[in-house]
Length: 616
Image 1: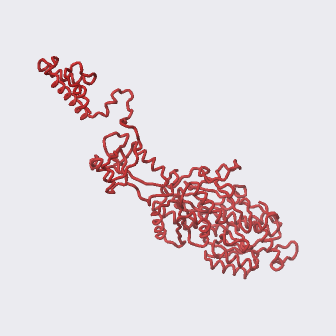
Image 2: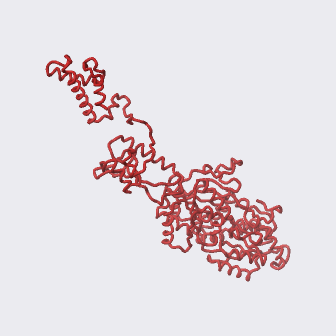
Image 3: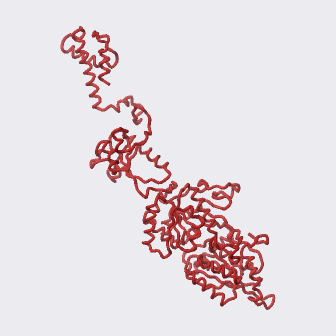
């Protein structure tokens, strides 16, 4: 985006020009119109940090590119490097050394430390712009520190992205894990109400200390974890989290741009441990200039062993654009940055778009967030009229830890796995069935009751882990009666029981029952395994039931014979004839009443009545 007079205090142009006007007579000597005017800029960074290495390399590339394309310029930017070694006190001391040795027009600080605030106060007094590649927090306002230029995205924008992601997936609470230093703390003040818990780690924390903190987190109910720390510490955190099983199904991990910006430069083992992580970082639109810079960076990477295997990121691009802006400001010219709209207001970079990424076999963009529209989809370029939305439907499918696409509930039962007892019987296997593979000894529990249980758990607002435990003995048979099975819940051997258990008043003192989820009355459920069979109705009838039924019919025949024989001639005759009559009466009661044969006057004691009472 072009820098124009209409923008008040936009970018470094106005600030640098103001400084140049004030100090040009004292800082520079111009012999004639063709002489080169030197613009001295101090650069303070941690030469061993990832940010320091990338910034140093990109600033060198920017200076080389700028003056190779603008050979006619009458100014020349000279950068004087100083190593802070990551120490805030050294940042201040190196700044003083630079001011003593050179007549500086600006100081660039590639450090996110408490020293930035002191340098900002110092810059306001001596009227030297202090350019910070990081947003130093809400406390450093432009009205108090008019010579402080903050390039990085401010923490309030990050807090809004976090809130949008949490709301999109309907999580009720989040635990923050952050690096305990001044640069990482501002996010607490911007989004403290969003975090139920927050855990601080030091850059010097040992693996044992990290594991101890992670074990404490495992005991909490919240399984949504936000990581806000340097990539070095984050790498160790995720490696240990994976060893503890915290990169598994049920967990959700979010990384801020402090980590996400360097994800492509991390060791493959770290990326492997981060599978399923969701992160966000500033969005840099693709362009020819960006591709050329990436090619030059790769070439420089091969020549400079100090850069290791690192990919250019937003800090490098911002540094590149910043150098071009400073060099262009010295010539009072106009500039368009590679980062796409490199513009500041009130001493800060205007909040831009963030891209939301998901780590799964690499890094893939799943959506965007911007201050105007909130979360937007990947197809946002084709739809400029999208309304503000935080719905997860705007995002591409996320692969969560454990390789699942099911959105983590964000809450668990302290990591406890419920023991669910199931009966082992030879009843209707469609209701509940337990099978064991003889080769692998693996037990599988299926059936309608299991399906209902799983659906009920899935509908809960939190994660529940469980195991089905068959109630069987060493021979694979039922280890007792259904009463014994239900008592296992009372004895706390099981957390619950599912299956074809009956709600009975004698069991209420020991367990609580759910409401029945079926209301079929008296009936039988059987599989439709053979639609052509007409004998399917016989399946529920066991051998004992057949014998009992036959015995009752014989008893009915004997009772009728005993009543009718003294008064009914049809019940006379030989022994064989009388035995045949008994069987005939037993059989005929199935199809018609016996009023034809009965001569007994007591109507209430008729054969059909006797039969009915016996069978019920």
